[in-house]
Structures are given as structure tokens and as C-alpha cells.
Amino acid sequence: MATAGSQTAGPPGAPRRARALALARRPKLWLFPGVLCALVAALLSLLYLGGIVNPTGHLHRLPIALVNADQAPPPPGQPVNLGTQLTRAVVAGTPDDTVRWRQTDDAGARDLLAAGKVYGVLLVPADFTATVTALATGGATHRPTLTVLTNPGLGSLGSSIAAQIAQNAAHQASVAAGQRLLAAVPAQGGPGAQGPDTGATARLLLADPFAVATQVGHPIGSHSGLGLSAFYFTLLAVLTGFIGGNIIHNGVDTALGYSDSEIGPWHTRRPTVPISRTQTLLLKMLMTAGIMLVTTSLVLLCTAGILGMDAPHQALLWVFAYCASLAVGLGVQAINAAFGGIGQLVSMFVFIALALPSSGATVPLQAVPGFYRFLAVFEPMRQLSDGIRAILFFDARSDAGLARGWVMIAIGVALALAFGFGMTRYYDRKGLHRWTPQPSE
Image (cartoon, rainbow, N blue to C red; front, side):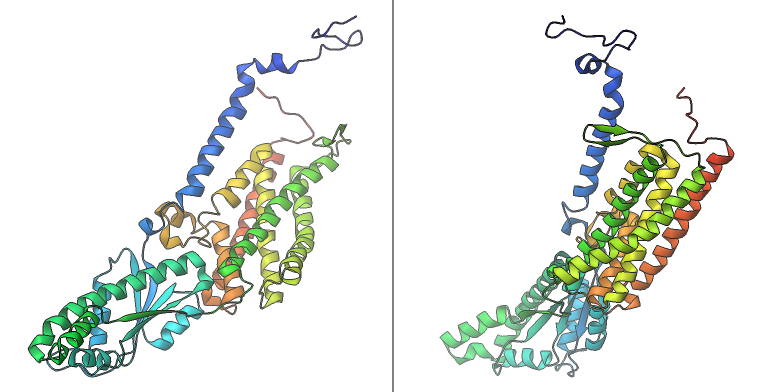
């Protein structure tokens, strides 16, 4: 009779069963999963936090429109009017590598906002010169107001950064102009000559003569998550393709007898179906194309139908989201076919780990390190988020990112097909069939 802690050999002739504690003492058993888990943890930490820890410190040519609506003639002795002087001072006072001021008129600025080309606008009013001149002569009835217009469709963080930059630029210009006005007032016998109290008040007003008002330049719906619904809908489309592709991959391998099925304590393996790698990949891709039709429909139904997300152009949104999920799903199948068991980790980095911080959907690409801007050139989530954002917030304008999204989806599908079938045909020609176990050494 076996005592507690003893090992039993089981029925006569049966192999001796291994014990967990005995296996845990083997260093080689720990080596591969330990090193791989450590690398994944380190890389994910660096990738995810590396793009967001210091957005203002990594600003690189954030696009903001600058509008001078002041068409008044120059004051006596001045070569240009005060609005032109102000805009020149704003541009000169901001480093070129931090902000890209796009000088245009009011209509042009509104169009840039509607196309998602700028994160905000700094607007100099038409009566700017007249109002500032009145301040200096004591005939002003109100302070000149500079207007900052925000673009929440590009995300709350990007819009907030642009508004802060525009407000700071306006404040610095106001202080500089106030110094010039204060220096000119005594010589002109201006507000300081009206009496001690009135003169002191006037000089205090002249010290910071410009008011700044912030308004929404391109409004979005109240059910848009403050501009973040585009990012989360994009994430849903990508996760649908990524998770769905892996589920289909594992399900087909189980059904064809190339992997075990384990549900709770029940463990089964079906008879192996002799099929080439190329035909297996074709089957998985066909199933991906069919199943994505259902999952995309459910995503749109749940988000727009049940949750009430603001979603204009729903038919176009569905088509674009389906094609986006399909492109990701086909890419997952191609990577899994090429890399085997580790393919799911590879596709996770391609479509999730590297894609999220370089998407530009939460933190503007102009506010992340250069490495992420490089990734954004080809990483799929950036292209997809631009397209979905254009559909949701910018009236499906092609120049708002939708055209680029379609082009990159087409390129992604073509690359997935070429890479996947190229690798499987190569393996098949080499005789590396899945139904024949390959030697490990």
C-alpha cells in the first residue's frame, strides 16, 4: 500500500508518471518561457509608456492654424497693421520644430478643422488694430479678443495641447504688446493723464491688453466619447480581426486533427486530415472572410445601435470596419502559417503592441518620440483610425484620412495573401507537411 508522498508506477508496464516538483527542478524547463515572458514584459512596458510619458516634451510640428482677419490700415508710423505684427510675433516666438503654424484665412481654417488637418486655430479678429489703438488713446470700450478654436474630433488630448499652445502664444503676445503700449502712453498724453485712479486702472489694462476666448471650432456629437469613440471603434475592429483570426486558426487546426481539444478535464484529438499547408491557409482565410461579416455587424449593432454612439454614414462605416477587420484577420492567418506556434505572439506585436502607441488616436503623432512616428507609416492601426475618424467626425472626407485608410487596407490584404501563400507553398514544395512530424534536432 502506497504511503503519502510516495510515487506509484501505475499498472504493470505503464510508464512512470512525472511529478511537478521534480520537473520544476530542471533549469532548462524554465529557460525558454522565462526569458520570453521577461522580454515581452519589458518590451510592452517600453512601448506602451514610451509613447505617452512626455507628450509635450516630444512635440514635433503640431499643426495649428493661424488666422489674421485684421484688414485695417497700419497705424501712423507702422509698416503693417497690428494683427500682422501679432501673427509674425507668434510665429517667431514658437520653435519651428514644436509647432507648425498654418497661416490662412477664416474660411481656410474652418476647412482645415473640418478635414482634421489642424488641432486648433488662433484667430485674430477683424477689429484688432482699431481696438488696440483705442486702448492706447483712452477711447476703448472693450479689450481685443483673440479666439482659440479647438478640434475635439482629433482627440481630447491633441485638441487640449493645441489650445494650450495657442493660449500661451496669445498671452506672450499680449504681454509684449502691453509693454510697447505702456511705453507709448506717457508720450501721447493717454490714459495716464485722466487722473490717478483712472490712469492706474488704464495702465493695468494696458499691461495685458488682449483677452483670449476658447471655443469649439469643429463640434462633434455628445455620444462621441470626447473624440475617443473613433479610437475605441478602431480598437474593436482590430481586436475583432486579431482575436477572431486566432480563434479560427486554432479551431481549424483542432478540427483537422493538428492540435488537441481541451475543455475542462476532457481532452480529445480528432483523426488527422491530410491536407497541404496552402490548402489549410486557404480554408482559414475563407472562414475569416465569412465570419468577419458577422462580427463586424455585431460590433456596429452594439456600439451604434445599443449604446447610441454617434455614427453618421453607418453603411460606409460598416464596409470600412469589415475590410479593416478582414485585413487584420488575413494578416494573422499569414503570420501563423509562416511562424507556427509562435505566430500568435508575432501577430500580437504587429497588430497590437506596436500599433497602439503609434496609432495617433489618443496621443497625437506629433507628440510622441520619432520611433513611433516611423512605425505610424506602416502600422495598420494608424491607417485604420484615420479612416474611421474621418467617417465619424469629418463627414467621410477622403482628405481627412479615409483615402489613405482604403489604400493601406488594400496593401495590407495584398501583403497578407502574398506572404502567407508564398510561405506555405515554399513549405509544401520542401515536403514539410504538417501531418508528418519533423525531427526537433
